[in-house]
Image (cartoon, rainbow, N blue to C red; front, side, top):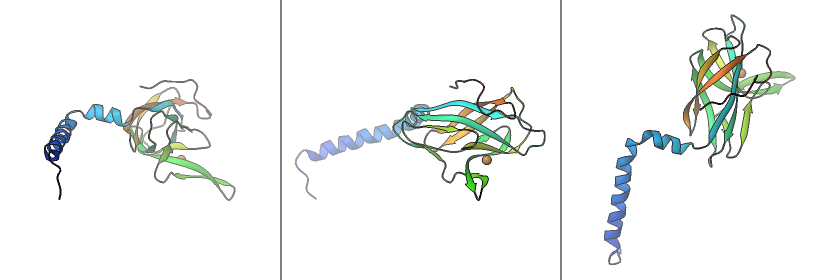
Length: 170
Ligand SMILES: [Cu+2]
């Protein structure tokens, strides 16, 4: 190994600076989480009322990635269902089917993706109670990079095709 004169003290100070940063990092978990996901915008979160004994419900929303990195919606958890999955619809021999999106739904930088009737949606599996028009329920969405984000869904009528009005969630 060859060291130029004067190089070693400089490397030592660099090492110390990195060490100090690593030591401080655990004391700022909230800031670190916000920095990791500066621009994921969630809007128009809505759902549909369900019949009394329905085993599943749906969740729709719009996701806009204003950050510089792609992220993925990988699932969620809710007070109203046993499980929350991200589903996609596809035609299979003339029959519309749905299944869980493998690996989650990607949102590229600058992209806006809508989960809406006939397309991608959140599936609330194992409903604990019927969803009633006019009420709201919470879902904690899980993103690969942004982590957990709590979103409130407004329940529309059973046949609703779009959110009644725009709601902003912070
Ligand atoms: Cu589904």
